[in-house]
Image (cartoon, rainbow, N blue to C red; front, side):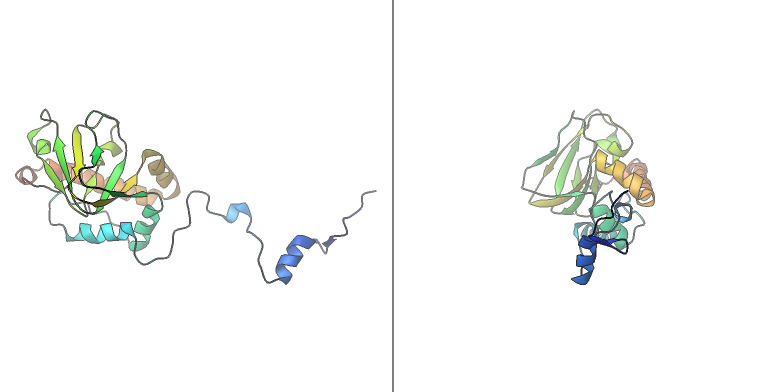
Length: 202
């Protein structure tokens, strides 16, 4: 016959019994854990919420304005990489495939489009805090047709393609709102009034 280990009492292993006696709780069952991302900190402010605050200040027709609350922005931040970039740093190189969506939090960037692009899109752009970079890459895997450099010390958030897919799987409502707002930026960019803006924001 089988012998029951002496360290198991009343169906509770002795190791768990010792944890409970010490006032500590054992780890939760893996199904209870969020395996998609790190736990979102409860901090009141983060780079993404600062980006959202800057975006709300913009008056450009093609400003990026997803309908997200602060908790959604903190969730988005957990999927992004925060980067501090020096002046004259080449963020995007024309001709290279780059499926990363970027959010300008601090500083400023200068975007120059390929001369062969339509006039509205070919205007140089000053990318200020609250603007996005790479909205086209959400819908196309074509190589970049722009060059983008930092004009000063800048802080950006990067949402890579693999992390976009994870966001879509874990938080489809947030991912959809990002796509909707990015599509609105692209649509506004072709508006005649937007084409007349010499220093249009993204």
